[in-house]
Length: 263
Length: 87
Image (tube, rainbow over all chains, first blue to last red; front, side):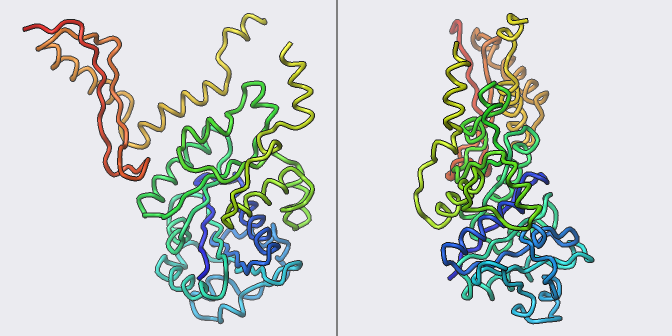
């Protein structure tokens, strides 16, 4: 039986889609059978982040409405044969699907995949309800900013009210230089405020923008964000990987600059 | 200029303090003003029976549900220092 994971955040633009693409790709690279479902109806994005936008024939709404079979709507990834995308519809809106239909579709996919990962839209309206309806666990993505953390807290409250079994935190776009100066909340601060288990720390890395430009998730690559996402994949898969130096921002350079700051 | 930097709270601390206050009212759906009113009313009632330190008293709404931060059973905690127990 596959595990159903929803990636959510409340606030937009904090990295839900990037996280979904990288975690999905990383798990597929580990040999898992993975399906990514874009539930942001009307504003689809996961397809471009994955670089699969030109291969779309059918979408989520077509599947739910019975215009095609699920198999016909799935887009196979360019690099990993066990990775699939179910794209969202671009010309419809959130009310085209309801939570009961989502649960039915997900339960149909459960025995065919190891991981079913849902990319949740921003907000707390129907799109959010659709995305969390069939999920077993949630990854809450936030950035170390007041607005994103406030929204994350609200989302966590809603997930708990909906009896989500497991809720973990991913802190994205961390800037260690700013934390060092006292101008950004540290991961400990954020965990202290939100009080849910920490699953991953992703540094602010320009390689994420470059990877998105190219439509190729950077998980596992020799970049800070690539390694951070790789570790998140291990942890999602149940392996207890310690938070490494670079995830805490203790690189060679910060060590050197730390010496100068102290004086 | 250097003195200013030393005196000033870092923006990280400001953010953390603001969030902590904000999230308490977000979570229980109760504004800071209302918390202040509850606090004053509690102080008034207790003052009938004993002398209390109204300045350092604190009230807080926390969630002590079974699952950590579950908000099903919020609890009001009042920490009221007693200065003198009148008969």
